[in-house]
Image 1 (spheres, one colour):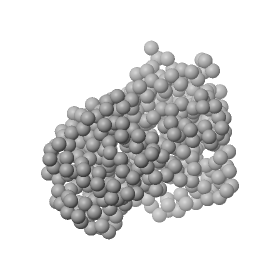
Image 2 (cartoon, one colour):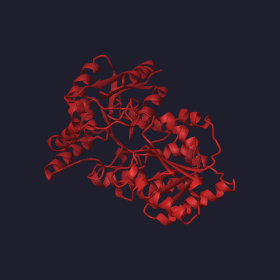
Image 3 (cartoon, one colour):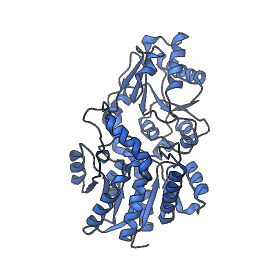
Image 4 (cartoon, helix red, strand yellow):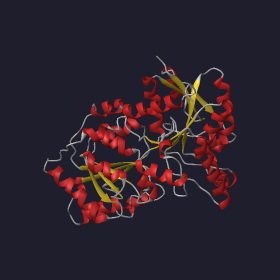
Length: 426
């Protein structure tokens, strides 16, 4: 029996790839199993027809709001799989948008999105509005819709908001406007969801609010993804194979990992013909050529998730690379949970005092090295390599730790929040 419907406002939604998309997919797939069905309001995207049809077959309506300019027709995979180059005119428009648009350049679908939601509300019995950030403008759109429809507003912080988290604020005036919008979001929210205990501490301090209003719900992995992965072939490699999947941006860099690989080869600890490192994402080719690692390191452009899982199955060691900064120390990288799902060896390069490091160490399959320490990273890779050579690379996963990130349990907690704030009880 269906207990409730809600409007789910999110910018990061298929066919887009990247941060936040997996969580949107997980919510939409599992919430109906708990008798809560979303209507998704998102931005117009190229190549979205098949995606929208797939969700329609699941009984989930996708509302796509068009924008004023081409910027709002966001490109997603496949259609060229990772080889898209942004035209110069688009780059110039984006640069101008940083100065002209508040709180971010994605705000241009605000009015069309609100209008579309108000029209759709006439045929839906929504119990609340669920809005996510980043981008900040998406949560702002959700708050405005909730106010217009007189519905409870649930706010999800997937990221911190500051100048290190992709929020480009060229002047103090822009910063003040952003802070004003953020405060308005927090005041309007019936509940706020964050992704880690450390992020909750940061959020409560930042806004001086009652901790009871803030719920910690981490990202996780879908049971069907785990089943799919463990059904894949698990080949024995002739070369020790390390895989990193993800983007490099802000302070997250490949330097330490590549430096460690170069060190191991130079010291003849691992022969170059016995080592293979695959980076799935946006690693710059010059990073390889500068260290003369062309015979060892391969770059694969961004790829659909099912294909990425196949690469995971071919790995002997998964690399998780994080920066040592406030942002990475209080949030969990989304890849963490996909990696845990595989139950394969993981080497995390990060702040060793972070929440992510703690989870890796407790998982039974993770090793941790300082993300700025080439020597320590090389030593950890050497340790795993020697186990691999001697055919003793077996892990003992702590299933109790790993299964706490099974998304069935996570969605159950989200449903509990919707039940508490539902218009029926609000």
